[in-house]
Length: 394
Image (cartoon, rainbow, N blue to C red; front, side):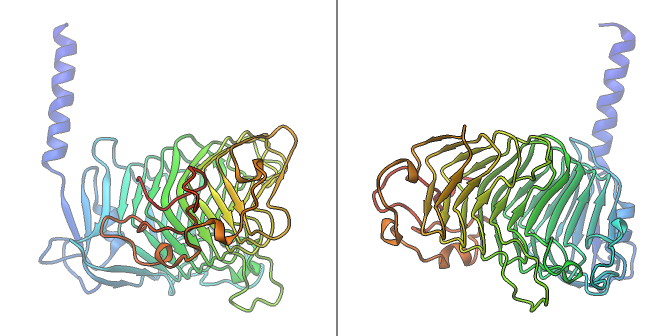
């Protein structure tokens, strides 16, 4: 090793150690007016974001934060030193966007990009977000052109657009233990507010796990025009697509999982151990995505249309269950590979085919570890290894 190379390595190591040594804890309180210390916290989350550097942690003290402009995150941490935004200890934190512009704009009015989201993350990479509740915003979390971010135990509900949306150039984002519900969009009479959306962009390595998406006005999960594979595991979508808000010209679609669009670039999404039930329309639909999707051990039950609808994708479906759905249980395009699924045998599936059709445990409080509590909901009474189970593994 040359002396020059050795010097560069030593300098890089010292710089990394210095960064870790100087990582700061920054504090914010709804009643703060100080300089960001624990005894004199900031009163603004935006001020803390502006002050944060790679490796820093922003701690939010308990209470409701009601910003009048959304929180803009446009800086980045690093792979080894992300920036973290979380409550202090186990304190409860709510971000209420009711006072933001666009809550809501009028019917058919546009919502400018910069106003989207209580948390608006644009070009912000290597962040970690924990245990935040976001309500009444023009989107709860809106992430655009941002990658390598981690979201855990986020609750986003009663927003005026989708609860959580990733868009644009986005890769290696992980969403785990998300609860997103009762989101609606008066601007569009229910046409576009989903529980979780990854739309109009591309990027490898995006994952959503052990999440619940329910009673949203449009779809539970929507991957409209996203041109790269998204991995969906242990995600539960129900009750989506009903007009709970009395919209006069209702346009909600009502699918549990909508996985592309007809003119979408082929995107080979992977869906495992997930459940779509009691949605207004279809359980799982490729929506015209021409890719090759993979469905392994999922369940579609009691939806208002097909359980699985693959109209364009030559997908692979293995060990899935479709039961008690309106119309035919499945609609599959020629070329789809189907094996070991409920419809591949002569057995007729009904409610009595399951140990339980009671979803109350699934819809109830999460465990202390953040996971959905296990139950016998939609577990086959036969004991066969088919369909999804809430005996979680994440």
